[in-house]
Image 1 (tube, one colour):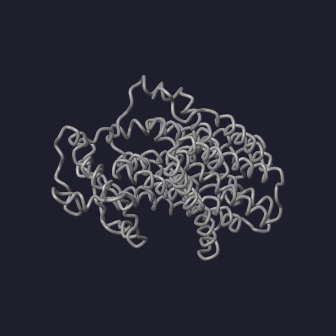
Image 2 (cartoon, helix red, strand yellow; image 1 turned 120 degrees about the vertical axis):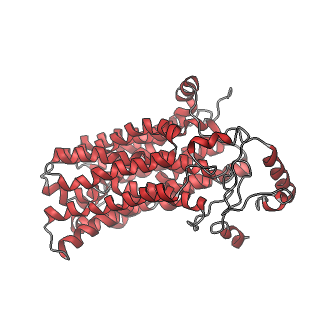
Image 3 (cartoon, one colour; image 1 turned 30 degrees about the vertical axis):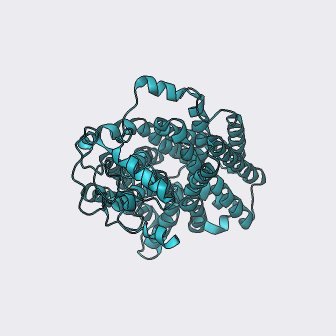
Length: 487
């Protein structure tokens, strides 16, 4: 059974015969067209995060001292980087509806790559703040990342595909804490550059990586499984295109065997295959909801119960990731910029496992209980314990390395898992609220970054305040029914 499931990660997937969406995720097969889309989805989001958060690892010492930045300057640069992402996400959804996620994804990467390269020209704090604002465009790539995956993977695996792409992409915020200090050290110690020049040259690397990834998307991937984005409606109109020759598709007489779900009994698999062959793929297209529907979703208690906790979890992650290296250096100055960055990388890298785990565990809970309430309680539990860890770090302000790093790892688990669990609940409530919930995460990041600015280097004070907010929000929304009665 295990070997059979592992084969799904490598071989070309079977596809829905009408929509041509993949029924499995070929994680380790970038040669396959579905594997390429999945690969560039998570890679594009990862390199976007890498460049977006390339500044904080060097702001600990190098950039701060070279530009003579105050603590307020550093905090302001963190705020504008998150503010830009929030503003971009307001328009990214409509752009995906109009032009398709692939072009929007690549466009955002290229728009963010240009100011990344221009970081080499910065001469003062205001210049850095301006550059970080425009680099913040890269944070908007989460939207096309998820929309693109949704368009290529069928309902039985789309949650897994989105969770993996989002979690692995978020890990870019940890990778950059490894890459940027290491590159800076190499340029200074091996190439003999001065710190004034070295940190500027270091930003050439993320520029090259982001640009190359955008080019790969444009040259090697498709808009949708059916072809061009503008032609995606042809499936609904009864004009299915010819399936690509490189993937296995279903043909008359073989659907019962090839379309079988290994998790289901033979009878269930046959019924599923037959229903799939005759049902029209309604609801499969990515379409903008009506204005009335948008208002209904935006002002419902159910959306509030998802959006506000996500603002605490993902918003908290964004804000903390901006200061975690500086916090370590403040409490453990002997580590220096590079070692502080390596330990700070752990906070972002744990997304690889913990964010998908939150959604997967939520789905397992639902599988055995068939209760959306249980999924919601799992989300509330994660949010409350996340707040407890923030309180523990903030109130104790550890100066003992194992204690600090252990508490931060615990915080990362519950924070990342909460992010994943949020989007495991969204499809049960208002599927069209996906973008709205995601945008509140960035708004939460801006708000929490302002809190960190207010308290300056008293990072522990800001953390326990975030903990109180997280606990109150998650307990305060726990009573709201997860699914509206009239929906």
